[in-house]
Length: 137
Image (cartoon, rainbow, N blue to C red; front, side):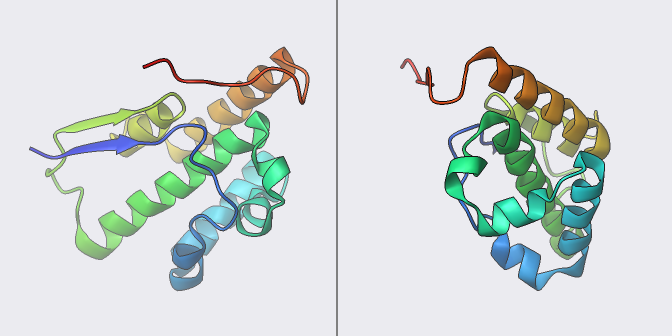
């Protein structure tokens, strides 16, 4: 049995996915497509920062989704990893959207737009610099 679990907010870092971006043209194309859909250069923010902006929920959510989806594209194209081998998809918070896309329940575009809207709504709920996130174990 194979399960894929995708990360949520808090796993973002400037440069995440840069090795994949530099190695695979289709990842570059996916980042470019995301830039067009979002109407801003999420690719530049992911690859170059600044970290403070990437940490803002409105940017974090589509950024983590984009990198997670890019990794899945690599696994599928380079190793055919997804050919009936995955039994379960799951994700923590926004990672659920990456899981749904990987399971073919959402398209890449749908997931990206949903997370853009979700991130903006969450960002507007609490003024910048106030509040925070924590996990209760």
